[in-house]
Amino acid sequence: MNQVLRNYNRSKTLTKTPQQMVATVFERCAFWMEGMAKCLEEKKYFERYQYSEKVVMALTYLMPLFADASSEQKQFAQEMKEFCFLILAFVTEINQKENLSLCSETRSLLQDMASIWQKV
Image (cartoon, rainbow, N blue to C red):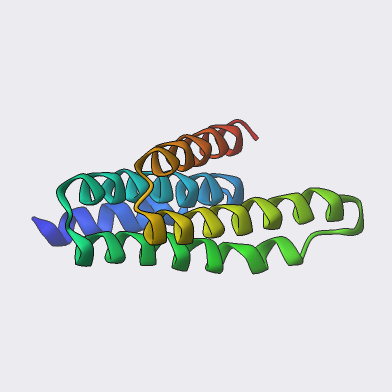
């Protein structure tokens, strides 16, 4: 059964547009931020680190994609890279200061960005 689900998810992923893929990355990051928030509340440090590492890896993977923007999209691409750097800075601050409210705000930002990319 698990193999069937994996195959379905893989085929579903392969049929997505690049914009839908970016939206999916932001959605997953928002999901992982929610996991970080739960771990902050429950003082689960190792699990929190795992969630934050997933966010960092996903955004680090995403940023070079914006570097390939055409000349008329350079400004937009730069703003997207700055957004990703901002989220990475927030993740660092959340981990250093165990800031639950910033974690919730960051999750909301990621959800909003995913919503925007779904409409593109």
